Amino acid sequence: MDRLNTRNILRRKRHKIEGNNYNCVLCEGRYEETAFHLFFSCTFTHICWEKIGIFGNFAANIFDMMSQAKRAFGGKFFMEIFMIGAWQIWKQRNNLTFNRSNPTLQSCLFLFKQEAQLQAHRINKELDRHSFLAVINSLVPDPL
Image: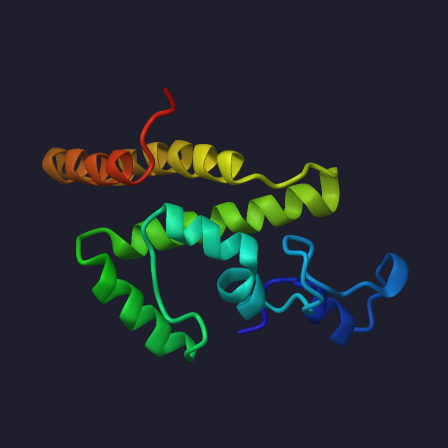
């Protein structure tokens, strides 16, 4: 819905970016940074989604892709996990853009797990909270 200030949106609003580079900062491709590219077709993003257990046909339209990914996930908490993953991808992008901090898969997964543990406190039922944390721990195990 064009709410995120991706580089594509900034270009359309005639905002000048240093070097007129409106390409995605997370991948090495020469693709313009649109919301769809950033969250679904960026190579860095593909790896992040794969590591947290979300698979889909990222070439499909958004609705078909999300339906397929939810079916492939096959369990509770898909939307919660998807939203936390998208938030971490956005934060990796912003850390690179504003703080010159290189995005890494390890950082994304660590922050994903940390955010998921915080979000678990919002789950009302104790049993659901433990189930959610079990899913998170199965997707992103603690480092050895």
